[in-house]
Image (tube, rainbow, N blue to C red; front, side):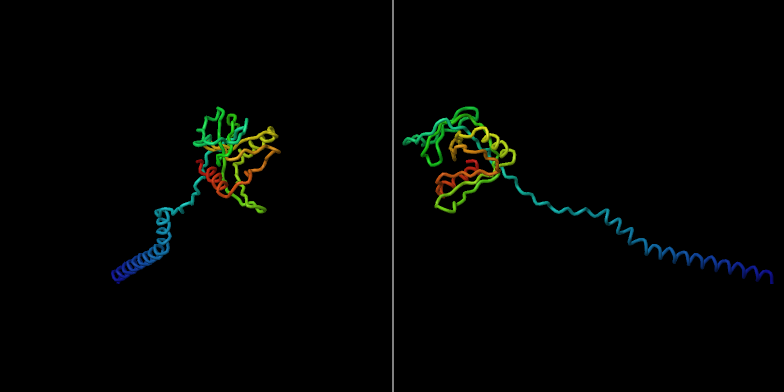
Length: 202
């Protein structure tokens, strides 16, 4: 009787242990099913290279600075005097120069200012058949030009590109805006030529 009781007790213990192991295995399986997706997602996020969108880049506008030279004298060009035009002179030296249309000849002082130009275009005047050329300057150049025109009212200056005078206006008042209007009964062809030379530097 005692032996059978002990055998029955061992069998119950064995069954209880096996049942506990089975329950533990089920719990672990359930936990693994719940936790693994999070672990895999975290690992995949770390392993996946971050996608970077290419940022559009606007090419910077590069325009050669525009020389401003005080005018000493201006004459009507003589036949053959501007063909070919006088070669450009270094900024620190005086410059003989002709206008774009080869109609005028100038004696110019050394460069007083170098203006950083950000844009130039020919514009039709509303009341007649002539054109004007609008020059847009960088903020620092517009401030320097305002200071220069304030100190030189009554004098004549020439805007010079590659040895040619694009315009030679008289300073009648301070010019403190960021744009300059070059006028003087310009035809469309001449205005387009001046605007192109301003933009291209040639």
